[in-house]
Length: 319
Image (cartoon, rainbow, N blue to C red):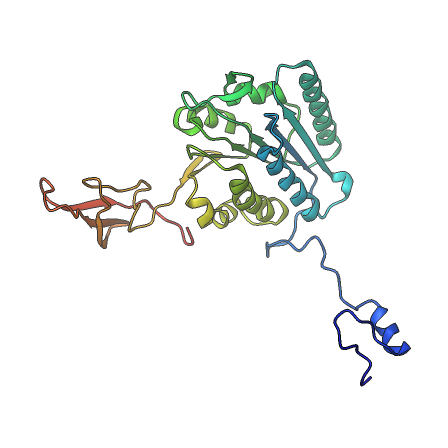
């Protein structure tokens, strides 16, 4: 009604009819938590989310924050019955401590009982821990390190004796240092026990960056949505991830390395330098099914021909 609204903000309507109308609920449908980003439907099969992360005693633990991010994602996206979602944590400072070993056994029992009761279950494991920059082994406790396979065997039991058949299982190893530089064979061996395994190759990996951009997208679109793994991975390799770290994907007999390879600066996935300078981009030549990038050194005193030809890495649309 005219003159019913006060001149100041947050002042209630004056007349009783308008006041009652303002207090009534707005007929707005609350969005369902099943509204993920995928357009291929939602998957409600039983799921186990197991976060394993190192506790360094810091007030702000980035590893624990990353684990919480995945847990909140699961709580908001999972559309099945609550009893079909099992979320486990293993927060450790030393995997050899008696209380940690007891927690490991408790989690292992819970996983086994869940998998036996809930058929067609799926599994996501995230390992968030430091690695040794000299040999790539993962921090076990104190100053001791162990291989990825040894840590998985300690937490889950040997691969061949794990009584937990899963229809789909993903392993994310969020670790920096020398993991992929020195221990790639160990990661490949560990990947044989999972449907797909992911690792990151930067010398210093930010757990929140890779979790909030890459892992979140893969889980949202592939696990909760119904997109293929390839489509979800290509979608997840965003500029924020590409500029931060290479991503290694192990899936069955398939192994891939996703890396930032812009034609003008990093056509082969590595920073191109000539005479300590960035060479000038000239053109891209198509040779058969591949591309060759032509660059020119900017130093006139460069010994020999100044034009450089770099074989470009194969690319995927959107990457």
